[in-house]
Image (cartoon, rainbow, N blue to C red; front, top):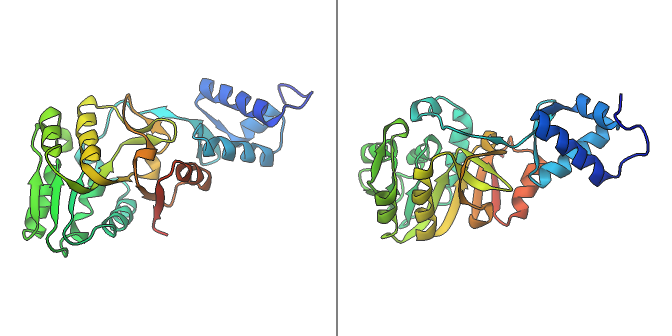
Length: 264
């Protein structure tokens, strides 16, 4: 039964009421929303699409949720077992941006690690990374490439380096492209992380690069960490998988970055 049968709410009032319920409950089904607002499924889906385009809500199967906070990140080992087909598709799309003779940065993460097989045919390529697994694979599969590990404080769980020393090395380099990974991103907060030690390294890479590309799974969209890295508008290109909804994709495009849905 609807909470308010009369008078009918205008769209902005209806959407604000939906947001209020979501802030309280976190997630609601479409059926629950139709009962709460006393409107049709079609009206609810239009409202959800508009709120999602604005980056205020995020669809889930059968319903919608509010942005959720990421408090910790999974280890490298745990991430390596997740969403491998999507990672491979995003890695291929990202690698297609690379040209011979470039100096590029690969941020830590299993998605960017998957770029390595697509890079080794290049000539005069310099690859910079803070990821031990990426550097190890490059040395094995692409010994003809110039490989630079940025050093810094080791973070064993993620097999990477973080902090001031890693950032200082990146600031001494002139990068053509920086490929940045993230565990959380959305329209309102941009790229975030629950780890303050990662922020300085990612920002240093962005500052040193002529062009910046975010490579992030759609499953991470609509989540946020405590520490802000950059706005989506700070990236020239954003690569995600094709599971990103059309409403969310429209909102991302409105930020100004060129959006690629890997797998299309």
